[in-house]
Image 1 (tube, rainbow, N blue to C red):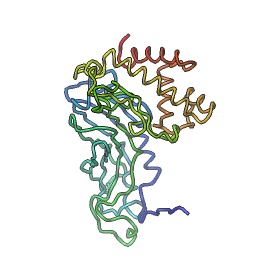
Image 2: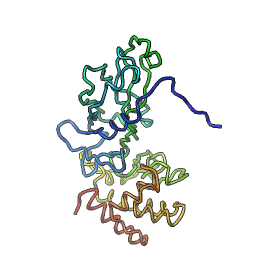
Image 3: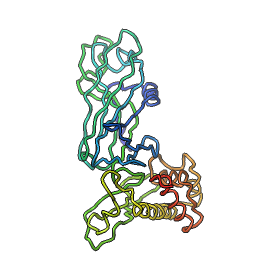
Image 4: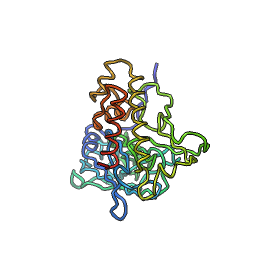
Amino acid sequence: MSAIRIPPHPLVPEALRKHIAEGLKLAFSAPGGQQTGCREVAPRRFVFGVESGWSVNHHDLQVRCEVPAIDAGALFGANGVVCRTAGLGISLEWSSIGSARREMTPPTIIRAPAEAVSASLVLGFDIPAGSMRGTMKLSLQIIVAESGVPDGTERHLANTKGFRLGPLSDEFELEFDGDGSLFPITEREGDPTEALWQFCCLAWDDILVDEFSPEHLSLSINLSHSSFSELKGGNEKPYQTNLFRQVVASWLTLFVLKVKERSPSDATWDAICQRLSGTYLPGSIADAAAYLITVGELDVSSAESLMETSQRWIDKSITGVQ
């Protein structure tokens, strides 16, 4: 029998959470107006540096989140989540296993309003150059920021400072591996005699569920190889060279063929090629394959056709070369 966790206090109503999630807006910018090359490759999953010279290793990133106006009155009082004299805090929480960090922005305090509807909020933080690796998970959280004095009808409500009242949004993912790319790219210090790059395929239990991230697969680049500088190019436009385009096209071909090999059935593979929603989880390996096949207009009828159309798409759409 599975254990069921029952929260000790009322949490944020699902209707309010849905309203906030639907109106939530994320924006990304770099100081000086440089284009970040941000692209949403799956619902709530962003990559950076696409058709841009922006690199997490060399450039800052500003993250801003606009929270829509909410019926804050529904959060206070006997039918809410805290007593009317308490203060609620709304924060952005982010974590990164690759950078071994978890932080929350200073909370924006809201209190029981004189009017029911509060104004929209803008929260944000900055990511300094060179401080982030891997995947950042980002979500909007609401906590008890200030304890209040509950009356007789409010004693069932949360009133301990710091108590979490549930997320206000689904998780967002910001992918920073490989100086910003549609593909999970990792760099490693290998032996100079080893290959310049490898298709790393790690423990795919289920392509319909497993995340499209360096935890499961990557284009692994050998920093020690004599051709590494030729592959990467200059710091202003890293990974924009002719050699890199050829490598990515080869990696993409291998990736699609591997997904076809690992598909549970021919029907599943057809669903991936047609990008049929409901067949796989958002952000999964299959979801990424469906996106790349559809957006890249890849011809999967044969390995030869796949390689040719992959090269054509990488040249035109990813790097801007016509």
